[in-house]
Length: 157
Image (cartoon, rainbow, N blue to C red; front, top):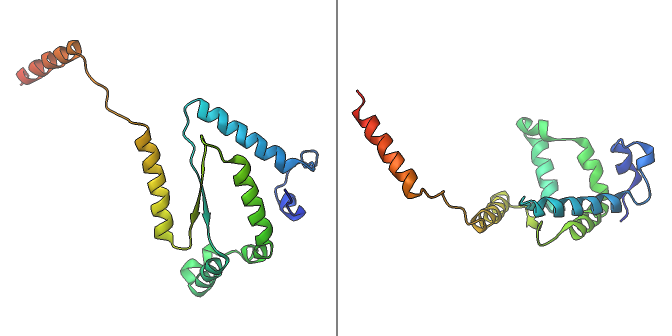
């Protein structure tokens, strides 16, 4: 996986940690950590919200046109657009290496915000439904205890 040096420099990592294999090592660790978490019962859903270059430009222009959106704008975002193909390669590699049955990635087209939100919500709902959750049941002994408490509370003034 190739990543521009300027990206690593901004990470402010101690130089001894920046080896030739830093990204391969990080992705390996992420995949294994996620595997560990899922074996412990954690549910992991990862979402990559893909905004096209055209839509990104449109959103930048809206931020420049609207004073109430200026706080969202960063000139560095425009600078980073020059490296979009490198970023896309890095994203694709990260998704490929860290995707698994237990911790899937959902690549969501995000040019249309409401549609992207709908897809994310649907994936979350599906994951929660697979948990097959139910309220705990009360056995006969506990039910009798509750009836006795109800009767006692009913007689209070």
